[in-house]
Amino acid sequence: MLDLDIRSRQPIYEQLVEKMKELIIHEVWKPHEQLPSVRQLAKEVTINPNTIQKAYRELEHQGYIYSIPGKGSFVAPQSPSVSQEKAATIKQQMLKLLCEALYLGIGKEELLSLVETAEQLVKGAKTND
Amino acid sequence: MLDLDIRSRQPIYEQLVEKMKELIIHEVWKPHEQLPSVRQLAKEVTINPNTIQKAYRELEHQGYIYSIPGKGSFVAPQSPSVSQEKAATIKQQMLKLLCEALYLGIGKEELLSLVETAEQLVKGAKTND
DNA sequence: TAACTGTATTAGTTATTATAGTACACATCA
DNA sequence: TGATGTGTACTATAATAACTAATACAGTTA
Image 1 (spheres, rainbow over the protein chains, first blue to last red):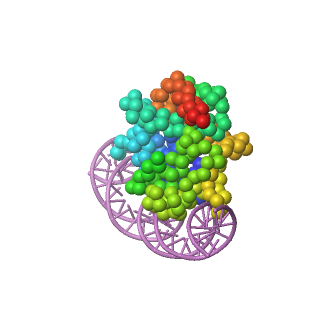
Image 2 (image 1 turned 180 degrees about the vertical axis):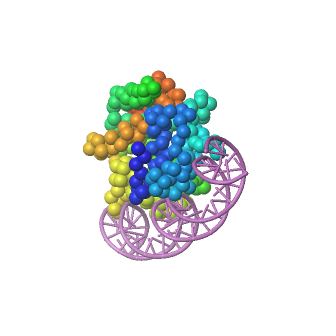
Image 3 (image 1 turned 90 degrees about the horizontal axis):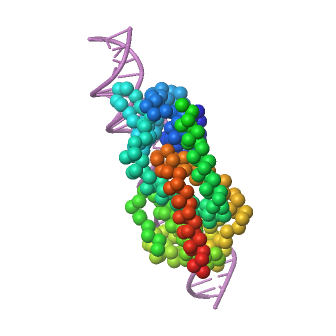
């Protein structure tokens, strides 16, 4: 599920953040679901607990999970206030990427269909309840 | 034109690559136009020539410029072969970003209109010949 | 030749990353 | 209560990567 590449130049904690974000976005992990504990996950993937905690801290900072000392870490439900903050940044990244895509010769129709694909992926996950 | 932030945690050469890519994509710099030399640009922004060269090397690797030893560096025209290689990567990045956007509550309509905006930006540049 | 171009190499400093060990406070349950 | 599991914090250290700098080399052009 969380296949990490130790010898990658991309830091382990970053890989963790990306993989777990995807699992949350596609609702493999549902809101308020408890995540594996720092120590448990560290034991499973045989890396240092501090590295896991760094990833969890980042995910919490980005609003994807929340932690309760003594209890555990859980998937955060999406609140409009959090989304509002990030939306501008995301749209900025998107616009830059779109311009690059168009410049490289990717057609407008293709980009529009990508939006459809993404919608299917996300919506598909949500209806799997 | 190339405003760099020395104290940023983002490396200078990366800032250079991004800014110059934008200038090329939006055709402020046209195909086959000669870029400022490594040393000249280094003197202008008062940083090490090697940092400039590292940025140029990266831009050349990504196919945005080409360099001729002894002559200079120039804006590369977009060849379909180059685009083909990058297209898959770009689309992959795009899909990931789109899923994240949808999850954060950005509407599908808003994303579709972003495509239109990007198209205007790129097309607008190309008609400024 | 002289002055310009890109490129390569080496070196040194700084920043980042991952690990290890320890400690603390809170929650839960036997 | 005691034991265990939870998140969190802190220091320290080793290893690696990133960044910048200085220098030298080779090609181009006038």
